[in-house]
Image 1 (cartoon, helix red, strand yellow):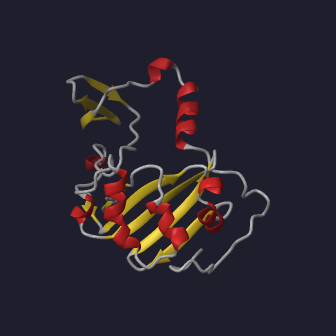
Image 2 (spheres, rainbow, N blue to C red):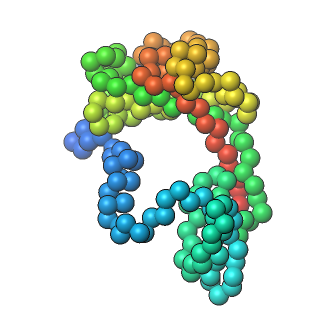
Length: 203
């Protein structure tokens, strides 16, 4: 855990298992798909809505006009869930925090200062209005999220296809941070991608 100027505030040494990067989502996804029959996953389908039929059954309506009925329904479709209305009338609302995501590749060779700051596992640099979270992934990748307190429209003009412009848009938010921290965004091998998380309380 680092302060805004790069000072180490807390360092939790590895217990011998910390040198193993977390599994990539793409690998987990591939393993899951390979374990299922080919017909188990329906591709190019977008759920439009769900209707309760009674007796524990639900009808799923797809945007292509097709429907199917199921007695087992798991709502894992994100903030704008089509399943949630079955349980609550609450709608998602912006909570004031936007996340920006970047990657540094071959970090130990190309970005040694940042690699040292990140350590062998995960890095947290938290301050009012800006939190930086980075962790190592397989292949020498450092994956970073920056959490910014900002208005909902803050990222509207950020072009994720233009790395230089997106980085320039983000740079003022990192003013005063240690170079090893600013490099997580400024030196990213990919254009910063912003997303505004939404949340609502419901039961």
